[in-house]
Amino acid sequence: MELKKLLIAGFMTCLCACNCVGEKPENPDDQQGTVTPPVEETFDVTVYKTSADKSYLFARSGFDFSKPGSMSPNQIVYDKTRTQQEIDGFGLAVTTASCYNLLQMSQEDRTAFLTELFSKDNIGSSLIRVAIGASDFCVGDNYTWCDKEGMQNFAVHSQDKELLFPILKEIYAINPDVKIIGSPWSCPKWMKGSHKYYDGYDESVLESEFDSWTSGRLRPSCYDDYAEYFVKWIQTMEAEGFDVYAVTMQNEPLNHGNSMSMYMPWKDQLKFIKVLGPAIQAAGLDTKIMLYDHNYNYDGKTDQDNYPLNIYADPEASKWAAGSAWHNYGGSVTELNEIYKTYPDKGIWFTEASIGEWNYDLDGQVGGKFNPFVLDEYSSVFMGTMSRGGRGVTYWNLMLDQNKGPYSPHAGSCKTCYGGVTINSTNYKSITKNAHWYHVAHASAVVKPGARKLDVNTSDFHSNFECQMFLNPDNTIGVLICNRQDKDQALVFANTQFTVKYNVPAKSLVSLIWQE
Image (cartoon, rainbow, N blue to C red; front, top):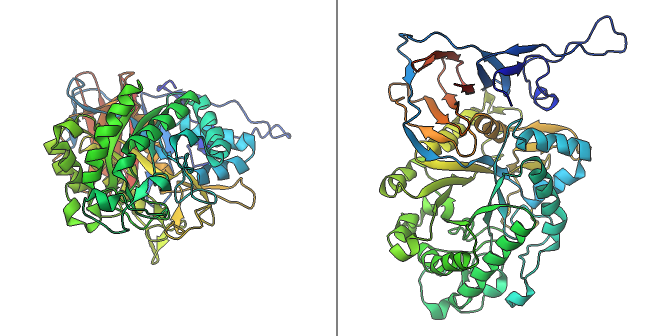
């Protein structure tokens, strides 16, 4: 994508569907309705804008640089040599439920949808999350890739072979640099032991039989087998052409109640990572291991406070941990302050959030008032994570239907969740883009994999106005802005060669990108 080439008329059919700037005008002299060629205009800065009142939805426009020397009080002076953490990217989870919906679409429509989101010439989403085995958004019964006891029985499950693999192949054909974070909802049942809510660490208790997909603990005698399970899963995925960038050892390890779950307190992860890390290394794999993968408030379990810090404190365990992963269903992003401050060399990733009936309405109205969730969660998850050393964000389901499914029929699955987009199952054609799609689009369009966050001072701005800058590998500058104020905010970005002036509308998300 050439940044200084902005097609004001007819940017792309897929983006025009979400209120992109300008549609191709019809030629009034042509009774067949043939459109005139698009008018190409050149601008220095490309802008994407989404407003809380939906008057703009990822609308694209552009403007030119100004001369240097602005005296604006709202000026951000940046230096490209002052960089912070590297960014991996942003995206949504490719669950088998999402894959099922995508595969009901026509090939043409599906390709257009996936191209819009993943192509580097479009939005360029580059980070996704997949379940290792089933999740609460699978189609049918729970499963792993080794449901019959013994690792000799490891094999790709038919649901992943028939649903997940075809969609991943289409995504990788569009963008071969997409990275995967894999998370299991449970180990194979034959590896589980302990009483359902046992919190201690007595191996005689942990080795007891436990025949349930929900809760339970990993039996210490199965650590080697489970490490081999991870290795085989990674090897199989990569043999199919899917880059497994990282794994977490357990989705929501403090959640006893999901339809498919396993309790894995920090002492269990500390012991297991000492087996898993060497197994991944011995197999010649470079897949990272992320700790935790759960809520900021540790689900109210005080003995689990500082979960990743407890593991980092053990040098043998810490050396295998690339960092920690987080969800926002409880607590505040400020929990990351201490995590980042204490171990700034360890990565931080946000790996799951969902919108649903509890916090979002597809019509944008809650209690008769506009739901500002599109701004509040972006502020918390994207701006909040990135300002605390965050390297990437993945949201939950990429695509669900208007019935919020398909979802697992088992107790504990979410039956009130929305996807990043909603597809109408009566025709598998009509798509509604929800808040999370816009969040991922705004970040992915201007902050590219390998970007470095710039160290700029924005402390003088109001707390409801946030701005972050990034240096992309191609030397472009990407800017993320979240304005939750009731007023517009004038901004000037300055260096020695030129300035970038922009008036950020009230209650809006704005992304900017320019080539120096």
